[in-house]
Amino acid sequence: MRVLGIESSCDETAAAVVEIDNNGHCTLLSNVVVSSLDLHATYGGIVPEIAARSHIEAVIPVVDQAIKASTDADDPWETIDAIAVTYGAGLGGSLLIGVLTARTLAIIKNKPLYAVNHVEGHLYANFITAVGSSPALSGLAMPASAPVFPILGLIVSGGHSQLVLFEDHFKYRLLGQTQDDAIGEAFDKVGKLLGLPYPGGISVEKQADLGNPEAFTLPKSKMAGKYDFSFSGIKTAVLRLAQQQIGEDFSFPSTQIAVRLSDQQKSDIAASFRRVAIATVVDKAVQAYEEFQPKTVIIGGGVASSPALRQALAERLPIEVTYADRKLCTDNGAMIATLGCHKLFYNQPTADPYELDIKPNLSM
Image 1 (cartoon, rainbow, N blue to C red):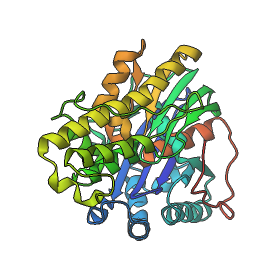
Image 2 (tube, rainbow, N blue to C red):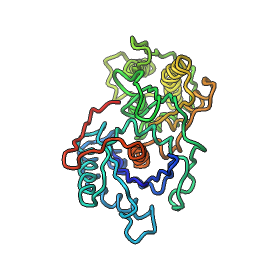
Image 3 (cartoon, rainbow, N blue to C red):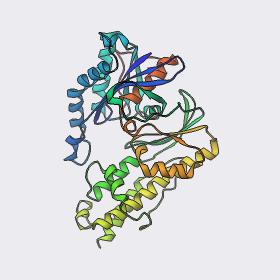
Image 4 (cartoon, helix red, strand yellow):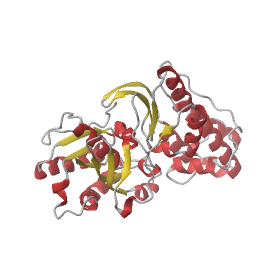
């Protein structure tokens, strides 16, 4: 069975086709992603209106390319058994374009429609175990086998930081989540503070590699919830540290700090921040592993591609962590199609293509 997945929760317009066999194994047949990242670089962050307009321009060509790349059939749509689409969480305008497109296609092509939680989808990228013959998929590294339940899932992205315990497909409980900012957002904001190129998260990683992670002491949040996270405090601490490094007090504007920091100061601040931010999520993951003893640990979201995070988890956990290819850690249609495949395989309820609405604040 083959499922078309459509993703448009933020600035990437993405579509993919995934096939699930009779044993529940998933193969990625096509994966197309068009990003409007360059359009947002001037503003130092995602502009929702620009993202939505970009989705309008790209969504039909992206879907068409994903469908045609997945098969040699004369009528590619005849090979598609269902459509899955992200309906939350995300930016309202961006979600709307993807959902309306999926609803329309489901009606016109007479295909069942599945509403997919974007956050849950990030973890399901780990269930893709093979790739098809499309040249565009060459170089992707897939896990040798699908994760085994029970599974501890760590989601780390620009908008989400969560720990989830899965007993089986669609049977899970949320152990904890961020109570304010997500780890990816914290990386981006620190990057902006240090005057690093957009997107800030990637730039902080590169800058941190040049610094001393023990140069500065930064606070690690302590939450009432055992597995909850908080990253607003460390963001403020980095701001105060940067102000201190240039000899100014708390009233000095954050937008004027970067030009007065040396390259070494930027590197040391970035490295110290990364060390504490990563330790925050790794500590919780290790604690959850020790309590629940899952058979598998998986990680999803853009920050899952961080080499520093992967190394820290490898050093602290007694089992190997399952990762999707780094290209499938950021937003993509493959993760949505894969979750859609499992919804189809396990006879989960479909969505009404005439009624499905977006849920920008959707949680797991």
